[in-house]
Amino acid sequence: MSDLSVNHLLGIKYLNKKDIGLIFETADHFKEVINRSIKKVPTLRDITIANIFFENSTRTRLSFELAEKRLSADVINFSSSQSSVKKGETLIDTVNNILSMKVDMVVMRHPNPGAGIFLAKHVKAAIINAGDGAHEHPTQALLDSYSIRERLGDVAGKNVVIVGDILHSRVALSNIFALKLQGAQVKVCGPKTLIPKHIESLGVTVETNLKKALEWCDVANMLRVQNERMEVSYFPTAREYTQQFGVNREILDGLNKEIVIMHPGPINRGVEITSDVADSSQSIILNQVENGVAIRMAVIYLLASKIK
Amino acid sequence: MSQKVLLSTKEIHIILHRLACQLLENHLDFKNTVLIGLQPRGIYLAERLTKLLKEEYGVKNIQLGFLDITFYRDDFRRGEKSLQATSTHIDFLVEDKKVVFIDDVLYTGRSIRAALTAIQSFGRPQEIELLTLIDRRFSRHLPIQPNYRGRQVDAINDEKVKVMWQENDGKDVVYLVGR
Image (cartoon, rainbow over all chains, first blue to last red; front, side):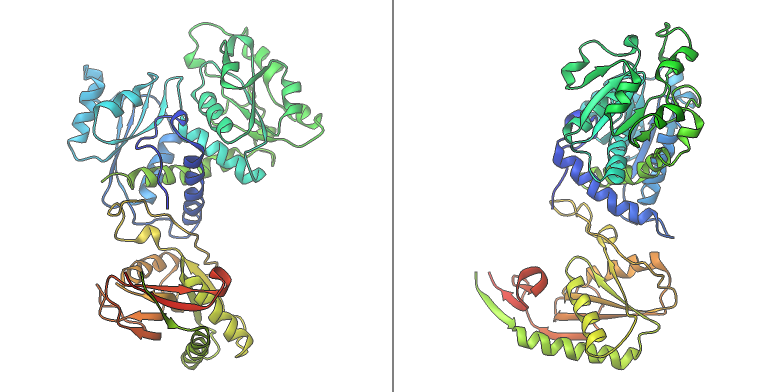
């Protein structure tokens, strides 16, 4: 029997290889549970979880909420647009108010990098980071690796290219940490303006030619072009981006092997990836979504078992 | 630490045959009966009995499943370490079936309580029976008794019953381990 080495899931950076193994193994069991006709277990019936979202989200929020409900936890939801945050309440005040209603765990998405870390230091509850600015999105990286493991058997030794907006992407950073930890080789590919300087220091290589990157890889994780985070233009037009970094059927057919296509969603169809590729058998985009629930159940279960 | 043999290999084999016959007596062709081995330790006994029933007593088509009860236990967050799950393999519905739970040792009865809840996720059984190799008398926390028992023992709480199986531990034997 083993435990996670952490009491909060703030980022992949704070996990070790054993933690990831334990989360995957636990997720295997929950995947079996959510494929039963009765998809629910009573394990967390004495735990209350607050989902606090200061940024928009559809899939992550639904996925967390479903995971919590499948574990029989009580769930309260909060989004900043309908709350007193608009009246000027601070983050700690908001969260402490919620915690005084006897909440054991907080799932938080926040536009500021490090918001989860800050919260973990100041409030008494287990914190799960559901995305903090351009910093980390650990459960996404876990479900991505889990989906690779499911499709290809293992993550170790695989070549993974992350394509697109690396600069603004918390998915990219968490994925780099998670993939490197499990022994995969990672390349990033995108317009030079969207690749952070010194990213090589994380142990990844940079490739600006999409064709070359795809020829090298076993898995391509196509990131979304995040228009909402770009206050200046990083590339001339979406059309030019698509021509250089968009994946379509023609490019994939030109490769000498069948690679796996991933996307964290939401997809800009026709920009980073064409519809026929997104909906093809090479794509595991919907598996990622299904696995997201199992992974989040595993993370919540393992963290909840450390609450005494 | 003292260790005493509770059941020898030979005794275990005789008991397995008896348990198989008792199951046969009550369930005949096993048409409407499913066997459920409780994870992690009950599965060896369940596999053994299934094999015996098939090979020695000519019963065909026995449905055998394994049930993990981790997520249904009542001691979540009460122990030092988190509870680690094992896998569930039940690829049939138990709706209106006669279910036989199979576990190696019946002690406090709490695992069986959890199993009774867990099995409901796979349908509503017509009835549920319990078969255990070792029944530790006088140590129950809940009103649960086996329908089929291999051997009843009086063990004090400090003692531990260790069931070992050829396929997992290299030898069929049951020990009573004292302090």
